[in-house]
Image (tube, rainbow, N blue to C red; front, side, top):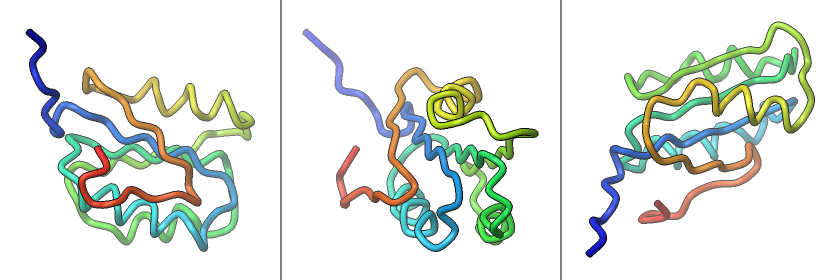
Length: 102
């Protein structure tokens, strides 16, 4: 018999690069979920993404900015490297979760 996964055991990962105008919606839907942590990994956007994200106040939110541009998949791996929860859900910066989406 399998045990259901509790939402607080899930890390939502949002890798981003130059999506300042869209990442807010992705983050807001992640914050509306019961995820145990939300990790945003910015790939040196330089477009104000980090400043926008810093305006959100939630203890589950962890923001990381790469010291150099890693590229798409390495940025995904960088985000993955910050997780502390046993389950992972990636959403893209121009995507969002529907209520109950975890």
